[in-house]
Amino acid sequence: MLIEGSKFTIRTWKKTDMAALQKHADNRNVSGFLLDRFPHPYTLADAGAFINSKLSQNPVVNFAIEINGEVAGGIGLEFRQDVYRKTPLIGYWLSEQHWGQGIMPEAVQLITNYAFEQLDVICILAFVLSRNPKSMRVLEKAGFEQQGIIKQSVIKDGVVMDEHVYGINKESRV
Image (cartoon, rainbow, N blue to C red):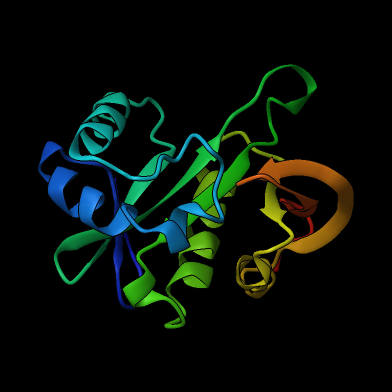
């Protein structure tokens, strides 16, 4: 699986991505905005376990973001059960050295298009911690709209905060 962006490539994970994944993911400025399941510190063992869990995906729903020949981020869809089975969550992260270059809005848009065109998806949602306005802007640039705010519903690093809900529907996208 390979999707070309203007400055990057979205592709399946490879075992050879371990060192680059560990290097770019081991950053508190990255993990501080993600779910606790994204560890900090991010060790080589964490990178290996993550990549090994993604090698046999079918369908492929979690991708490496490669910039200049090196993995520098990740993006993926998390499918849920029951009435949510056609409404996955999207998540993403990018190495801090590549922030502010327009990479993530384009990557989110490309994966959104992939999901709507190749997978049986009717809506994609994203949940963003209130302390991450840059991620909210990424989603807005990619065509997502804010659906609401769940007040004081999450805790990250001992801080209780709001969670912002963003979504895009198959029929309403541009």
